[in-house]
Image 1 (cartoon, rainbow, N blue to C red):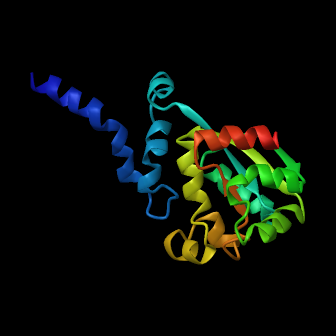
Image 2 (cartoon, rainbow, N blue to C red; image 1 turned 90 degrees about the vertical axis):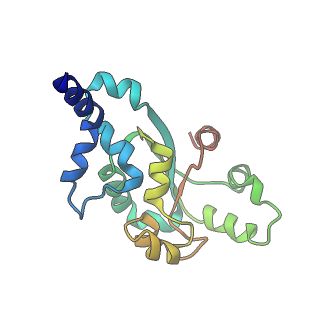
Length: 183
């Protein structure tokens, strides 16, 4: 009977044992535990317990000079690139994308910023992709990102709240809308 309990406990907690082996300088953090655990599960279990999710990243004009760094950071966090393309946004596309910001005092400068050069749109896939990408991107304000998320994209290459280098879909609905607009 003892062995039965021991086996049940092992099977229940074994996916978490790898956390003891994660080095302190690893990119793994408590928010990415679901993704990390899923990497160690058998494929049959992964298909059920760890469904893949898609999300969208857009490297904005000010981030294009660091495109290779951003792509390396994305791939290092386990995202698979499903589609990617360079796009030149029109004022109409910006208006559709940021429809909730039209009429705000900063909208004209936002439109000018997003249309001044090419952007790079990327469809990504991973377990917990939407939340995982949002964590990788970091807070909207790069100054805040440098304080609370120093390994984030915006901490590395963002310069201001508006010119923060990258966009990440914040929900499944936003992903579908943005994918339709950009792809």
